[in-house]
Image (cartoon, rainbow, N blue to C red; front, side, top):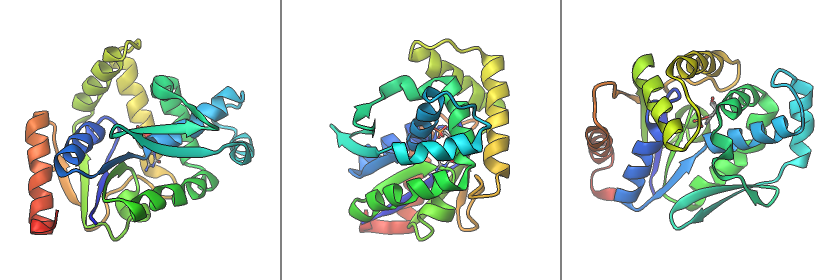
Length: 224
Ligand code: DC
């Protein structure tokens, strides 16, 4: 069993790279942001503002989240329903960031994340994987890139999904979200002291995948 933690700000390419690395190594890719997005979706659907902490906490007993892997892809079920790309909408990104700062939400999602890693070899991406969820991960990488590079990638990703996205809005919301995520009191998005920093601003996807595989090889040798 191997556990690889990939943390970093939004749009750093964590999910694309982690997915490719998981496929190469034949291990499970876990997108933990999808769990916070799912809670954000439920809170918005319930009509609460994202600043309404009591409202957010009151939603938790009504939420059952299940993570399933179908043909190698992660699906998150909210009360039995697969929300698909509905959790990728920019408004849900902002809700996800807001709910993720609420300690009760983080506690609510802790076991789901640790259970997956207890049963499978994983590459898990998020904000607190190396610091909180898997503090004993075999490999920890903190992946980042310039604000501009990240905002461009996110804009193109949304447009490719057929969603409306304008670079300036994406950049502004991304900076706000990064600020929320990295300054919150509980499990802020910071690099673990033993994480390897990887700035991929000037890397192609192939170069980035190769860089991650090289780090894993160096840390784990022939055990993968
Ligand atoms: O990775 P993402 O953009 O899909 O994550 C959505 C939000 O969820 C992000 O703004 C912060 C939060 N999040 C978190 O707090 N901890 C994680 N492990 C993953 C995501």
